[in-house]
Image (cartoon, rainbow, N blue to C red; front, top):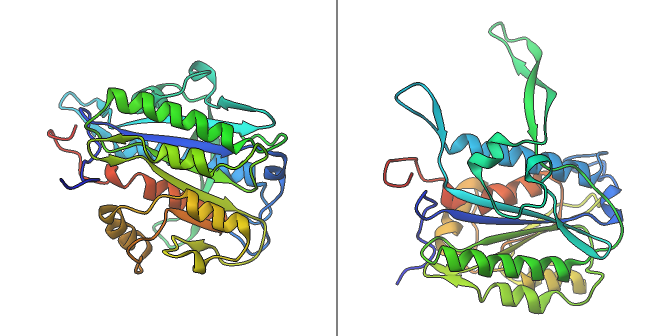
Length: 296
């Protein structure tokens, strides 16, 4: 049986579990030549995630005959932050303490709606600055250590819980955004355990985005460990990351506009703010199918 073929649908929703490193080093700025230059890593990750969640909601919103709109229940999202010795759900406001949240719940319960400025080109070709609403669900935070093992263990438990309720859906996708080494042990074993959790459509996927303040090009979706530095941490993240499913690899090639080798891993090493967004978009590729009655 082919695996990783299900699209996200109301009857078979997708599952995204975000793990956000909130350690003290996330307060450091990105490098001057990186996307997000000068901005704190934690601020940019929060901004990118909030923007992505809004885009996910919009892309799954359809007009009704009565002139209203409906957000299709095609995905469930959990966001966990880890720092010090704790791992906590980071959604706030009416969603405080919640793990899995549907898209319609997200739409109805932002923590805040900020007014942000965006530059556009008007009909005469002049640049103009407009103010746009920007929903916020996740606030930036940078604290102490990096309990990545604990975060992955909670993701493992959430994935098991979700799979038990959605055995025929596309499997859970776990996206770990981090800028440092785990402070609570070796995360490889628990990452491997997550990949043993499976629906009828395939095993759960573990993707990693390693961000830095180093002005070097990111290494994206390597197929071999030789493509990475000899640094033990780079090699560890490679071992932790899932192989990209063939169906997703083809979509990723379209997204990137370049070839992605068979066997490539879901890993971005030495990334920046643009890398974080790229991974979030890629992780949601099962949601890129057109909205129809059959996949509502």
